[in-house]
Image 1 (cartoon, rainbow, N blue to C red):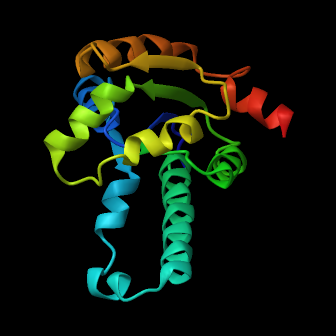
Image 2: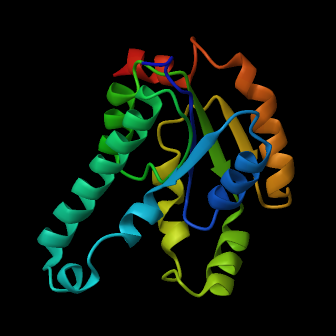
Length: 185
């Protein structure tokens, strides 16, 4: 078995720029790495069966999907792969699950922020998100209050944000946001 991989967890609302930053990170990462996004896992789910679920059934399916996503990331890192994780920590259990599962790995928790008016503009431009989704997530996603690094995509390019993140990667280790958040739990 190889050494464990590193995890860069990009946490932000829908339309905040996580995916664009992740793609830029992949282009610049010095070794092979993987971008794993919760949206990609959601896209793999059978659509007809999901549409037929009542609200409690849908909520449980989404919870299982997200819990599975966390385990996919942990499995890839355990196999020695560096992972750029694109996620929305909008429910406290998601962060708690990651704090526990990612204990063996170096994690860089990156808060991806964007001004509310720009989030709304991006949602309208995308056309594939329900308007107001990002605004509803804004306070929830960053409620934990501690990141290793925060980038603001309101006026900064994905390339600029990726460069800042890459500069922080060599310093990954403890103490970090994950160790501080674990100590608070």
